[in-house]
Image (spheres, rainbow, N blue to C red):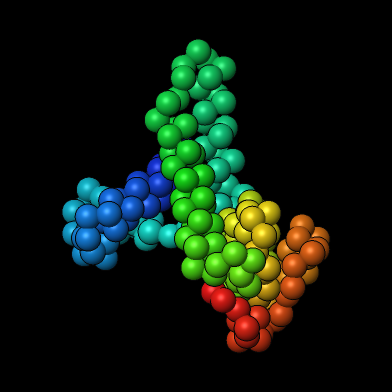
Length: 171
């Protein structure tokens, strides 16, 4: 249940960030205000590309499956997962729009979280796959996880130096 709750917090704050963007509000101010409430706290309230990695989605899916096995349709949990998928699509669409058709995009970070070489369920990998499918050229940099990522994405460029990876990138 804990990881499903954390996934919910991430999807929630990404939804609030999209609302803020649409109405011209500052998400940083909203996050600061939410974090001041002792019932909420400030953990897992950073908008971003969504949740990935080997635990949050797996545990959310397990709770959903368990619920369904017992005759309960977990619509709310399904919406948490759908919001995460929507976040990934928004990131890909925004990147493609900024880079232009056939643009070259540098992706800095391949692991599911900083300081690890673990690319299992990494949103960076998923985003790169979607970018390449849409016709973008990608150069990725993450010295700790290039070898692991290369097995999943053999057809993109890699560079251990993020500055070199970003050279000649449109985004």
